Image (cartoon, rainbow, N blue to C red; front, side, top):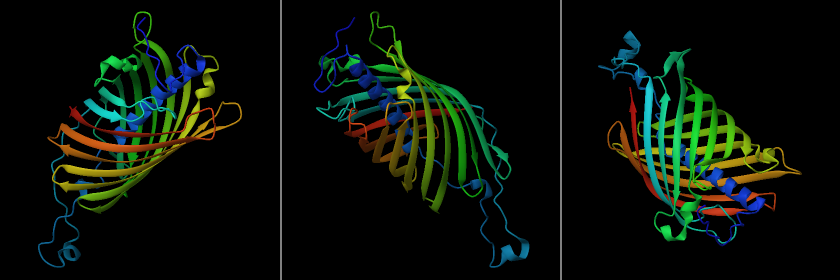
Length: 332
């Protein structure tokens, strides 16, 4: 077995509490990264298929009715493949309250999904999706002598969701994810499973177009986490419900360069603990994204998180993340 360094502020691995803290830190790191990907993803707020043609003379629309620009309908695409790599600094690797450890994290993601071009339905657009995602989380590449790489882990995810967008820029979604976390530690370093969860989710949101180059969006998302932690007893104490609100503003500064500041609040209710546990996460950040081509983009970002819990046995913490990433995305 590889030796695990005993780090300041981290409980011993041999204790159940220490293992629990590490599991929680890795799970929360995965969730924050995936939400960060959502925060930095640029979405279209207007429907170009109904773009009005300019009037040839004053009063043309009243004479002959509104005229629309005719556009060729693109061939429907069915499969989407994504490769993403993000390298960033974090001020609190294990999301602890005392003696936080700062380091760098490299997260690589490969995702394949059956994601057909949205179907016109009922005056809006319906978009189903089902797919598989694999992620590698690697710590401390800037200083491998500190053995932080002993905390490396991978994530396997199966996901599906159904999204419907209304004509007035409201949208709703329902989804389901199965996540399985694999530790690089163990007698044979054989990627032993240490956590898995089943996550039904529900979403409602709205875009508020301001101009052709900027819009505001507001979104609520709820997620139920049905969890299994191995080999800890009382596994279902991690079961919880997340209620998240995200507000973001997007502006195209110059062609293909986007600025997106955001604020996110997450309330988590743990449903199977003795007494009560409620956590509160506040996040602010901003991202710059540049589309190199239709299938490649780069980004840089910074974010600040504050976590509080009404259960004193669980850590409150602050955390700063800053880094860059690149995404390749193809559809066919």
